[in-house]
Image (tube, rainbow, N blue to C red):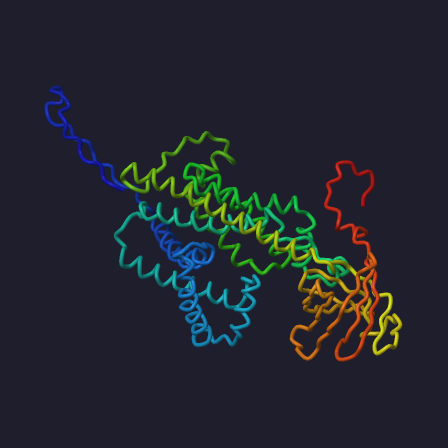
Length: 450
């Protein structure tokens, strides 16, 4: 903040001398406020750097993500082993992070490192800069960085829900599974997958705050909606044990930090029923033209980010839908199962005789045996040659090379060799419409509870 210069213009003969206008001093922050700002600035800078590099697909951010990962990863592992004495397989954590887990031991040690670094940096900063009374200019840029990063998280995660990409419809094999065999997380994914309307609504409630955060006059509204949306996501993560609790907690806190300057005004308006005057927006830069350019860039950033992620979400959803549309797709009930010319009766104790073959995707088959156990197999098919090859993940010695005859509608005959033995399997397609989860329609009038 700049100090206003004294007014040196002549005020008229009635004053008898030059009028002096007292200088306007910058508002002073309390000591706890200054310390809290320093700590938050360092912590969220560390957290947001990782978030920014990984969520933005545009160069040069994506080009430097590998360098950040390498440096950060080596540091976290070294501190874990030599400072915290944590014996843990961090290679497994890395594999788990690839499938979406953000609650691994690695991430918690990383968060602890960020907190320790922020604490040490805050102490050093407070001693070195103890005479400074405020950080108004730096605070404005800090809030801008928080807004951009939070939008960069909300918009992609919201866009992926606008289409059935994050929560696709349940697979055919899931229709045959039981509630008891599902984890709470799988149950949440199925619930969202059979309710595309709610998934779309949830996506909007993340995309809209992300866009509002990029429009300076609407930042407070965007932050309010962001904290509301993230509190709902956080409770879902706790309730269904989704492996993203730590990540969402940080997103929730970022929305709270953005709202902190307006907390008193929000309390007056929503709680105390008092009138709240408008607050003049403080410019980031001195020149009006540069501030207008900054405004345009923020809005353009939100629009481009939304457009890119909506396009990618639509692509992923289309790929899911295409992978399910295969000639063999369906639930196939086994009527006859022969091995080496010997029929195998459908005994409930037979762990080798197939009961059903479920083709979920063009590259995946789920086999349900008579005992109820399900086995996932890798599928490679050639519709032109009417042939297919089945292999077991992690077991390269087992293979089934089969040809199929689907000339009769609703029927399928498989023949060939399985595990080195000749087999003949006759199947018929089950009616998938009998599963209530396949009904996604909304019934305005419901005279009976389903």
